[in-house]
Image (cartoon, rainbow, N blue to C red; front, side, top):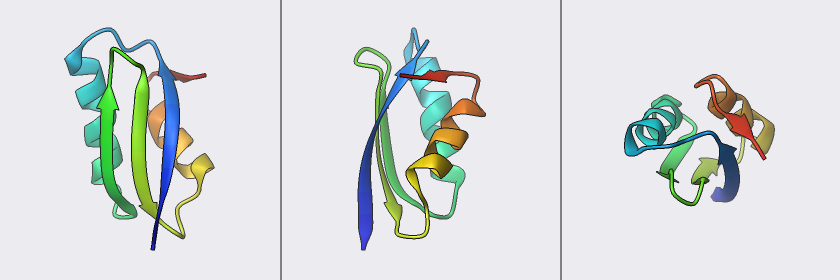
Length: 68
């Protein structure tokens, strides 16, 4: 069963920014789905049970953006 996480991302200013975060998340085998919106600064992520919120936060931070 997948868990849903709403992650606030700081610093995305365009669709290219949100696309970078979204692609990075989707590359991880434990991510079921990811939708990232630069206007709201929200990443909505569904992940398998073995992927924690901290794991997702590390993935986002690795793209160069901050978390709120």
